Image (cartoon, rainbow, N blue to C red; front, side, top):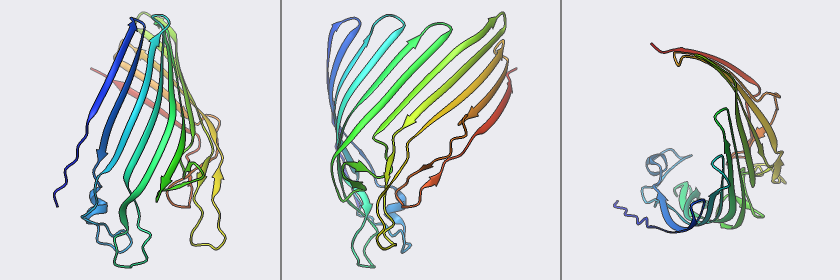
Length: 254
């Protein structure tokens, strides 16, 4: 089967000053159906060679600027229209393919990024807020996409603690916050209902020592506060996220 796809992109940029610009853009992108869904012959996951690419039409309005040579900001408003999304086939025909191009989804939102940099300190904050406007034949209910948070934020900081001769020592951390997510009900159980998984805040830390760019030692601690939480999936069984993890690394470059 021969499939062709058209992927145009166009943008307009306005530069009122050296420290501020506005960009409006439109793009149409696509991703082809995975081989697994096309060629799988197992009854549980029977695919179809007639699957088409999934498409996304994206409109963005981006504001990028700097308040000084140390502080930069980027604010992006977006609208995405996704079509021909591959979803489970709701047909009761046992011989029908399990996956079809039936899904549609419209999303709008805002992304923001702030960055501050000096020779001894770096900080970056980014956040995304998105709202599902409508959907058809997709994993969606009441303006929520199943298992996808409507709000995400990350703050990353890195501070140099030592810079003496050939020795340097950096301490970095990443703090991230995710909103609660709506998870799909168990269709195999009578009276099962959709349920929410709680949001979470996680902290990761790293200590890195460098000697003359030859010897590197790092100590990482993920999920410092040992937060216990679950993340959703396309199924009704949430997955347990790893608890606190420690890792040490030593590398030598000759």
